[in-house]
Length: 168
Image (cartoon, rainbow, N blue to C red; front, side):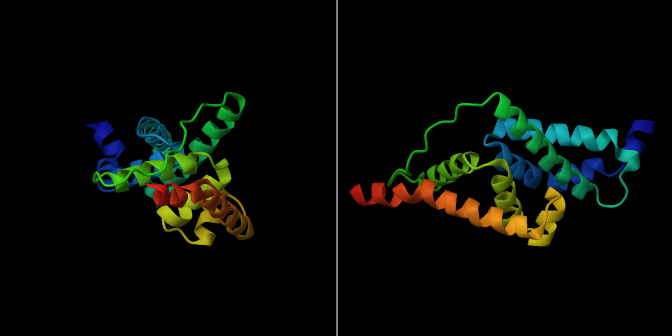
């Protein structure tokens, strides 16, 4: 009974915002399984600090997601993962949108961590430049330059898709 009162409101937060948090985590990590692990770790961190978190619990949870993702990116620098090749989207079988989404997720995974985090916050989470800077602990100018460079790199990675589509 005491445990139920201790985390009062957590079940509502997870029920209402859990799928959005998972979608963000999947974009940050590049896979659903890793995204689920990231959300679980962020929830664990929130529960450990529940009594000290006053006000916006979701904001704390989102910051924990991004900080844990950065920690994992730093760890991967020391032990890099091998990512799959990006394939251009297929044609005509009704799965085009799924292939484009998967290819974009893989392309996003190829970006440096800060650029990836900025693009996810700005264009997936619809955060303002100031909100993004606050979450990532950097300046608004850094957010602007990271977004610009990240979008340019995504354009480079996906430029071949139009050529592949024209050949089909």
